[in-house]
Amino acid sequence: MKKLILILLLGLACFWEPAMASDSNVPGAFKTSDGIFYLDLPPRADNAPGGAQFAREIAGLNLAERETAIVKAFLAGNVPSFSRKLRPLTFRQTLGSNSYTVVIFPVCDYLAIGSDEDYLYIPLTPSTAQYLAERMHCSMPTQKLVDIIYNKAGIKLRPQPIPPSDQMTTVPVFMQHTDSVKQQLGEMGYDRTADSLIAGHKKDIIISNKIYSPDRNYERVVIYGWHRSVNDPIQPVYNGHSAQYADYSHGVRLIWNTVLINGDSSSFREILKNSQLAGLLSSEGVITRPYYPPSDLFTSMGSLLNSSPSQFILFPNYPNPFNGTTTLSYRLKQSTPVNLSIYNAKGEKIATLINQFQPAGEYRLQWNAATFSSGCYFYRLSSASFSQSRKMLMIK
Image (tube, rainbow, N blue to C red):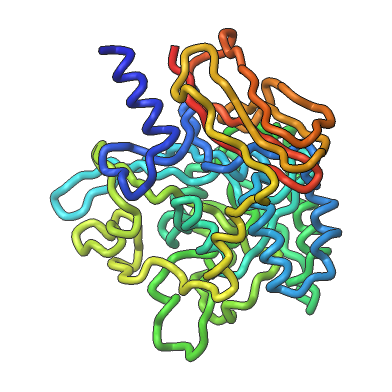
């Protein structure tokens, strides 16, 4: 019976989809023994470009091309650990005569592309940020949650404004601001692999009724934050920028869609639309449309981003779940150098099974994981033009 319960609990963390999440505290994420959750992203590939190289690759692109490249890089897993970790954050509040203990799961830092050592903070237009949030079963914060995250952040950075210019929305300025944040963290001796919440260095794209308020006749982004100290933000809630505007100071912080209220799981959006509970997450009261309008750029991109070349097939492992040993198999329809590696839930490579040129054909091999603990793992097959990852679950 104990083993059956363990299988069910680990299975929830590894495989349960959000639509089926009523009985799971944080469905779809990976939880480690230290209480940190991880976004459901592939492990970062060994040959993925770092932030500086990625900046050079996107510097000459127009906005649509740039954001398409960012989305592809993010969903492929070219994301540092601090942009994929979700840290539980608890606060208490009284509404009327009722007292509530609320747990939210914000990502430790703003969205970035690259590695822990070489990364680039990436501002996005709000519809693109919404697209990524939904792909990750997340939302963006409200004004109230931005304040709470800053107040409880373990690392509070000072804002570093760059003088206004027509270059504020360009990649070189994104890199300039990223470097200034790196310098602050370096002066503090902070290890980027640590699990602290970090705040103060960006304005947040927020969820607000001002997304759709009638005071503007164009789609807009709503921003707030850039705190100098507790309750002292540089940027009040503002919706004057067009939805196509994204400058270096804008940050995308994802928050898990699941919120725990007195131990019970609820939906972030449903809470914001609930007249009795919205005040737990919102200083505006009810937010009837707690999301940005969809982007035409990504309405048909899902199948493209998820598709893989037909000449390569990575099959599900068998058995799954497994106890100690499982079989991995794949098919190559042309000769190519291939790498087959195993990663843990943190995205750390723990084993390389194949790293050589192979002729076309079907391959099958066993992974003996006897020395590893129970939990979720990835296996990734990659070549120069192809990469695919799958999840597997070991129960001992």
